[in-house]
Image (spheres, rainbow, N blue to C red):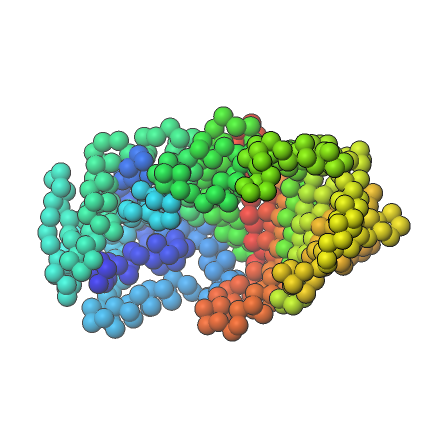
Length: 524
């Protein structure tokens, strides 16, 4: 049994979501919080992730949490339901639990967790710390749980700190500096003791600087040191994730971030503040392009200054070449001889956006659209590519000329039932999966764009002064997910909560080397 049953059930709720354990406190317990020990003091200075949150919210925060859970899950009294389930599971295991007398008397207001030693896929050690209002009562609870445990429990001590080791899975729990600490393994527990007695994450300047960006009044804050994760993984971090950072101008080895979760009656906000080290935070506003996309889109995303990102990608690709196809430093020069100037094309690109529509795999379509500065290099290149492809007589490829619109389409069984369509007209370039979305991206319909959708308007208003860069229509996205789920049991369970999410709005703004992103979920 992983950790004594009653301790595990009361405390592991933190691991699957601070909101659940937060509500288990049922609001004001009459306590003034825990001891004065900082939760981050149990985290080693090397820990790249630290999560800290309120487990017994009071006042407005409590009301906001309860309203959000009621709106999403339809639960009128979530605290009572969680406690009932906790006690029910304990009874089923033959170890009765009375939350009111055994846990509530010592449970503090906040809890935290560190994760350390990232190998590229998993963290090799973690521990949870929970504030106590009565360390003696908490110690009595620990002793009682150890005595009741069916598995052998070993007493041990380290640096004058006594703790318990569960023989079943070697999990460890004890009290460190008036904090109840639960660790996956003994090594993590000892790391927490060493942090309290010596250097800890709480002493790190990067942690302090990042936490200054946390939102006041949040339910939980999540600190992430991206550079430390990369260092610990031995550079084994996902290559796509690294490219995503670099494409936005972020140097991941120097980046830290803190995400704050702020619940509300009709929306839930996740605010992410990132310190980019010596890098200048990317700026720009592509919201005007985003609002012109198809109003039936279930998801849409816009990005500014796309030409700069394309230029960086082209430079890297030209430098490396394509193994077996194009030697290093030959891509740009080779295409230029064919009449296609990649650097001029990149210089002419401005903003970009993409959207997707459809309610099933068969009806799924979408397009990527770019705006240009009017210098015509990019739009003329599309026409040149069409001419080149047509001249080769490649099967499945056809040039398109329709008035001011030019381009080409590619038909292939590898692409599915719809063609890949590349079109240009005026100052726009569109690459669509399907003819219709490509044409809609070039010439937005009157009265049928995202700007005309009430839910999109709500997302824009919720973001306030932060320009919107991403949007999702909750019901439309759910319909697609349902069609792809094949009646999966886990999806049916998740649907009970997802069906109350009406929209998602994403936006960001920069100030020097700090960028703040907002993810706001509208809740019905």
